[in-house]
Image (cartoon, rainbow, N blue to C red; front, side, top):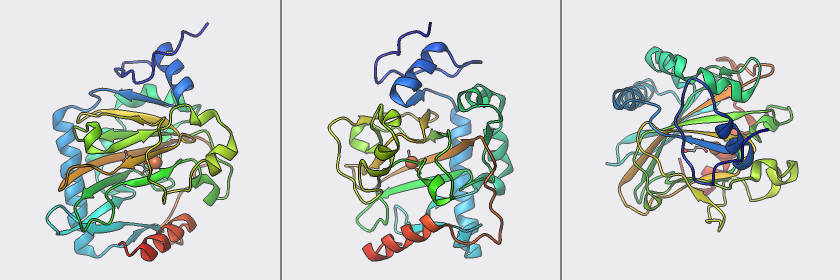
Length: 276
Ligand SMILES: O=C(O)CCC(=O)C(=O)O
Ligand SMILES: [Fe+2]
């Protein structure tokens, strides 16, 4: 018999194996929060990598990698910055090695047979930056599920978990990740229609705030509704890294790939709103 799920809001430690309690929690609520998965040195490594990649991509004038657009906007001091860097681990061997470290192996068992880090699949390993300044092009991210992307890759949403690494101390006042626990089991129509994708930001009475410290990791089901809330503090920045763990036939993109349809729609929406 599987044990009862620990109460909502529980946090966990990542050990050599995923425990029955952790499985039960993921099954019941659609996500897991692991404390202290990265060391402070590793947190610094990822932040440095993000800054270096940003500088290099800006210098090269790269606007899109393998059909996935980069998102641009002003940084904290108004300098040019990149809010979303796809396929980051392909250009950063140390980051790739970190994400392939043995400590993450137990997570693959949660996803299914043949699970792998999608370094070169879908959008690859994505480095995010949310900047809360008056001129920011992206202080937060509207409600969405991640699984719907599959539809734009012309297949039904697959069993998919998204693994997020967090680099900042985030309290509810700092905004950050908000989840609607349990929405991963509510069927395809909920995945499609519960809220208007990406343009809707309003808090939900049932949302859960994931309070993080640098080095924490979250895992969420691809069908779970979530958003990134804007910080209430002006001139604040939050960073995150998302790793797709996938199974099934790989969706590998190449330098010749056309811009992904959902990114074309996203770009259009941002233009209409006057963003970057
Ligand atoms: O930054 C986060 O914590 C979440 C990002 C996210 O939901 C996404 O990129 O799909
Ligand atoms: Fe997401």
